[in-house]
Image (cartoon, rainbow, N blue to C red; front, side):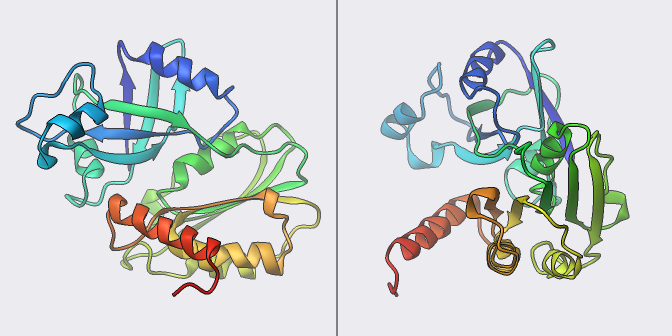
Length: 260
């Protein structure tokens, strides 16, 4: 993973939108706007204007990323990128980013924060979910109890997590197996001795988690739906554009039971 720190004249506008969310989300996220090379874009950048007036090949590519941390005094924010060589758009950009590079951010938005009234907290995810898991764990108060299951390639990908909570952490190593192809997370969560009391769960990563860990937590362990934050951050074999289409189709299938 590679961390890129953003700052500059646009931070004040970002901060105003962040404060409008009341600072209530630990999985706060933005959309990064990757401009095509060789084109001059309108200033200020307006994506509606771009789509109306510029050729399709000039349309920017958007990628969604969790904000790792915000430092209002330094007027900076950090985003952690998963880098798989030259694969994708955002990873290669992050791998070669240099001071002074320009990036447009849209947002932020968010949907989850740890509930202090829960008896304990469950976090499950892969590298894509790791920044949000870290932010959630760091937001827990002293005395809070949490367990985290995190899949990474190997020991060299484990990172230190600063939290005052009582944390039990399980790093799961997939080795040479491609990301998104193992059952490590599902197997580990099912084999773990479930703690008593009311649990709040955060399950974010590759889309397979929606069909494995989510039903186990909701159905087998009877965690209330309101206490489960679950989302597919990515789907193996698809770009974010294809992933959005897949998620839309999943929602449509739920809204229209029996649809083929």
